[in-house]
Length: 412
Image 1 (cartoon, rainbow, N blue to C red):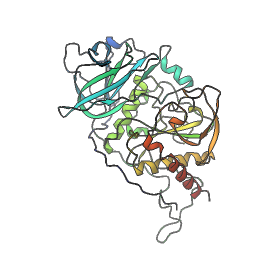
Image 2 (cartoon, one colour):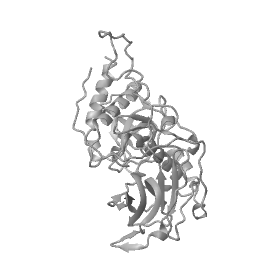
Image 3 (cartoon, helix red, strand yellow):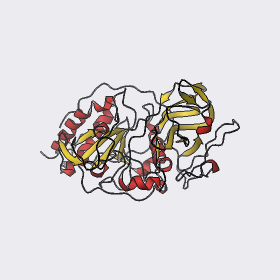
Image 4 (cartoon, rainbow, N blue to C red):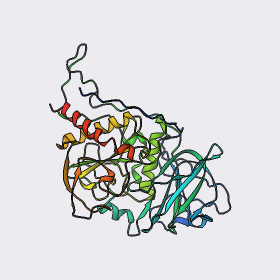
């Protein structure tokens, strides 16, 4: 059996917050201040009198509130405009969205344990849908763009700073993902490290024909509410590539936070940006657990919304965290190569190789351009982005190498 080299892992501080028990319906109302928005169906904050911004109660493991920012950007200095320090009830994720071609630079800081933390940049949301989904998301109006939804952990105050462009409809979304949740481990299709091929004391099992499917937590296990979706899954006719992403949310989360983080991303993608579903086909946390993302079935070629112009023949895997300055865990890297090997082996692709595909139109390659790309690539290979972060990008050759080795284990 191939051996996977272990590498030094980075110890991260865990924040206690995550998912909650689910209830049947979305409890939300529409505030007149944002009623004109095409797909913002949650209640929006009304804090004009300086009172605490209150999020609604948790329903379906989530609570969200939208805050219009234009009138709140009252503090100006050095080319930036900031809100006052806004008191809130508990939230754990934040995102900012807008319409138009201008791109503001957004920073945020939050209050945790009665202490205001450092400013952090809100990364731009560069994992995007294309084709029919892009048109449906706009619903005949200007498409909403935004930052990535950033995981903050349990916080009770927020301040936003905007540099450069200031679209009039800037909207801050506060998301409470609820308390932590224990999720039962899914069963493996076949044991990853012990197939029991007649070894002493074990019952021999038939060797899988393909690289086996790794254990995958289901949408139900992270609490997906399918009523948030906008339309139906689309399916690709073939699989040529696996695109590697990071969610750019945060690395400071605990095991029990993960279901809530995924729900928060799902809520932001569907209810703030208007997409059909969560962008990614699969997500992988730092504990090496794989999670089903976009609906349609883990064994089918579901079209995602992760790599503009290249969603039509690919699968998107997003590692939960931000990897520009921090390297991913060993467990996350190993699960990534195993997920890639599973899908690409069935598609008959060489995980180490390159191939030619045709762009449907990205910010790097125009529609119709023939592009030679890696079978396993980073988001930055096809779009103008730093995703999946420099510290994950340097491990792409390792992922290719060991995905191929795993493929060969079951085809030799």
